[in-house]
Length: 143
Image (cartoon, rainbow, N blue to C red; front, side):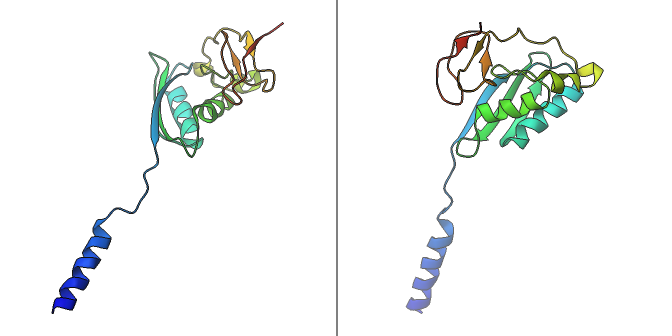
């Protein structure tokens, strides 16, 4: 009987101990330009396709709140996916072809033309001096 009790206690201990390793999650607010409900759907879908666990975009504030596992994706990857779908973000500018393919109601006023660019990654731009989100180099002023 003691053996059975000991075995049951060991089994209970094994199953009650959490063996999963928690991945650290990060919640971040990202500026994303857009207009309407269709924009919201596309922006959130793009963020999730790039690895965001949660994504919620507000049309009034133009802010996307994303939660993601830092070991699986990054803010830069999420923003790049959104820009590839046609929407400018705080760090990435959508290519004109992607923007031109948006429905008429989704054609937002484009953010200021980027005047700073990473010397190694031409797709990383900004409207003010800063660091490249991919390599950390200083953004250089466009000539």
